[in-house]
Length: 272
Image (cartoon, rainbow, N blue to C red; front, top):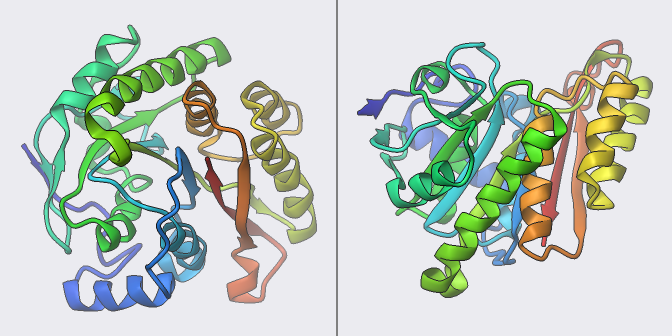
């Protein structure tokens, strides 16, 4: 099955030449080759958060196989929805689904369901792909959309992803699959409040504390749409031996619009 772009010409240019130009401008130098276990990147329109995403992807090695974790904004599909077959048609070329890696993840976690419906109109994973394609044209992905699950369910999914990556690492060597988590942070609050709330979530990530992140988002009512995918990515990274996380860039929509009355927060983080 071939999935068509859902948000081309909305979140990013649909024209390949314009998109290539935009991505290269946002990434600046693409020469970074840092081997990361996981990256956290925003998913707003490129006008607002593309400079944060570009800064992250410009620094890391993007392997041929990547696992994408993002929130389900549409409410369609299952609670944890994976796609195991087919291709995603993108302006910069088609991206294949890595069936082998997807099957290994599904086999390790009972609550993952095959659901194309969850992905058809979802933007959170799609907007990451042009940045990834800029670094690796022969890209294979495992897309996973996640709705609301509890911490133990999130932990189980993270462990299953780590086990699948460990099994693949024996074959992949230095080209171990990368986890890409797609999330924005606080939504539509005054800039000063967004900064304070987002700092709490970012500190939990930098401390490699997935349960702490889960709890602080709920306790402080942080409207971080992808906090559960981030928890999953953190658990998997720790299982894979992650030792540190680095905040590459933090910004809000107010930095672009000049209006700080109601902003959305964006953070780019590398975990290694």
